[in-house]
Length: 307
Image 1: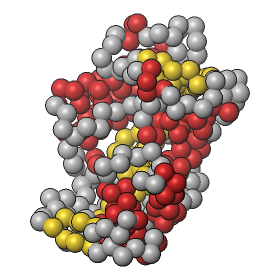
Image 2: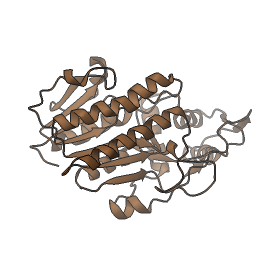
Image 3: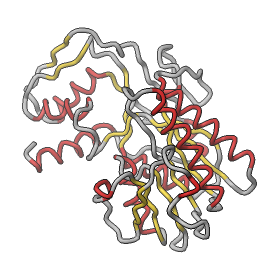
Image 4: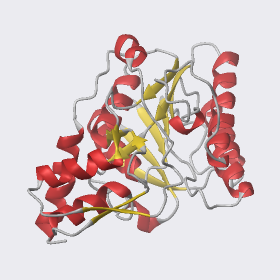
């Protein structure tokens, strides 16, 4: 990182994007933060984070608001439509065409280093085998198909240009303060804190992988300081079933909650287990935060706000 450098971060108003911008700001001359609206740029903490109101995939890249005279030394591409209920045209436009637009912007602004977030959902998670970067590709949803198309476009771009390097991180489920309140982890934590029943669908045997958002930011920061190329699974080395998470929350918070099983879980057969050898050896990256630390961090937010 270099105080003379300029970095562009897409999806800067998202859960991960806000953390990334605030983390990078002290080390760059300017952090351009691509956001959708002025209201979505209120969580930035530094004056050198400059919001850009622009939608990839929906606006002509020719009209990008920053002059081509400005060099983006590095780009962190986080923007994605993660709404699994969105129609296919929207997902294709936002995730695939949006990435194509971003790469055209990178070309015009002479970017030498790119980092892109993708998803572990491009893998086959129903074989109950340990997944690594060479595992079978089998899209979980159409969203994950569009992310894979974006990956292919990203890789082709890197192959065409000399002196340009890049990394794709296939990310598991990021957790931390600021994550969506209606997702599984916050719901279980709040239930445990209030001694309410923790409701799990099916038998609670769906195995998921959670990574602390602070580790995601660390990995992105590390990757900007290297010229490594390739695809890396950005995951926690340990995965947990839903019932294990529920029991852990009850233990951590000394809760009197009961675990209640209800109906069926259509995702019960999903099994996200990972080999982290590649990212550990190639990038020298190891997750710093265990799931217990992440759960306690999130719970502190609720306790301090009396939620």
